[in-house]
Every structure is written in C-alpha cells, then in structure tokens.
Image 1: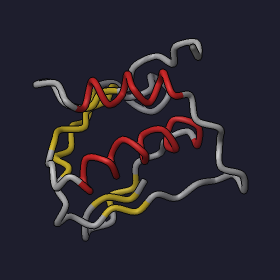
Image 2: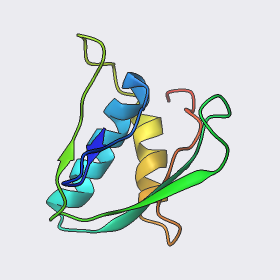
Image 3: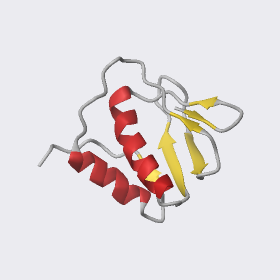
Image 4: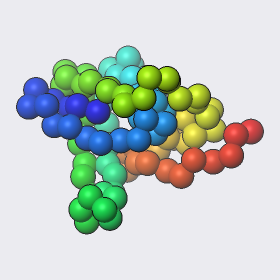
Length: 98
C-alpha cells in the first residue's frame, strides 16, 4: 500500500491487503476519515504505526501476486467493526468463515 503524496510504502500481505482495501474503500466512499494502526512485525522493527486515512490523501493498493485473494466475509466484517470503533481500523486475526 502506498499512502500520501510522499509515497510512504507500507508492506502488507496480499490476502490482508485485499480485505483492508475493501474496508478502506468502503469508508472513503462514505467520505469517512479514520485512524488505521498496526503493530510492526518483529522481523521488520519493533513498535507500531498509525495513519490518518482521509479521502483527500492519495492511496494506492499494489499487490505482489497476480491473483486477487478470495475474501473472507467474517474477516471483512471484523475489520469494518474495528474501523467503525473509536480506536480505528486495526488488523485483527482472521476468523473462520461462517
């Protein structure tokens, strides 16, 4: 994912990125701004990052693989619930599909 005019690149697994794209684009289509926060992978660096997602800030989704991953509706709903909360969108573990 590439965010902002400075082109901040955020490495996200294709499967997770597909789910985040659906949630983020749904929120942006509604003209809703929100916080997106995640913990860094220990292999990358310790700590966490938070971004303010706003419809006026450029956002680009870039996938490594050639196929779009299948979506898990339960995971999308869990991510959307997080995005709609006061704490903002956070990556939650993928639940089993209903």
